[in-house]
Length: 389
Image (cartoon, rainbow, N blue to C red; front, side):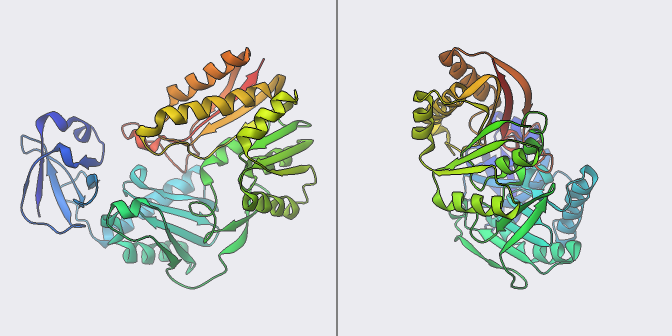
């Protein structure tokens, strides 16, 4: 097995538990390898740090799978890790619809597995994990007793690994658009055409957190996508909900979800959200609850300034649209906007709006997307519930 020896000044993060090794952290390589192979990683003093798969076409050249030198990386390894991941979700009560594997947080870097009742959707986002895809699919089929397994490997990150984007059935064919029931609410899910794997499981905990605030409320659900926040607000007693998104397709799906649940409190707007919020502010329109769940404004540090400006703008308008004593529910799924930066942006927006914010809740993603404290990349979602005074 090839050996990767790190530079002394660049080994602290990996020794501290982070599983990613970048090319500029390597001091030397001993032995031959083929991309996707398992290699061993050592510090500058030849102390073993872990083993994982290598790909020198990627900026992340090694992703560690194990810190145990005696542990073999074989099919039994993946069966063990997948069963451990599923046992954790069962323990925390996330079983019917959930994220079963959250990559690095489950010791399976670059692997995503989402469950929608008896449908499983997977993403293998690096070469090393993709080489094990067939074994992983067979193990998932055994664990969940299902042949309904679909791959959503249409993420551009695969191209950075030297792989093609692709989607399709991995076992039996099935209708990829179906109804999912979650927390007593029905949703249309399309695992072939929907964003990511078809539905965002990561906000479930935050949608449930709406319950104490929305009864008899007027609600604006901006950047609603298919309306999941608005559906929960309606389920919990909102008097009226306006769902707003730039995508006409998303609004059509939102309408379908409202019809599916016989929710008649909805209004729908397919508009540029930034422009429409600014217009509503000029009209002095206000709501009891304003919910903001925009897509990630940046996926790299180079666009951080523009992203920060965007988050400030949308939160400024959201705050201005909340009645005194009402609530702002605001999210960011941009990993590169760290938690303190997100708070500061919202505080700056409140200052410009001359409003005071009182924190009710500040959450990350749902616990089926667990955080590993020494892997900051696992903490990407921020969701604040704030009373606007």
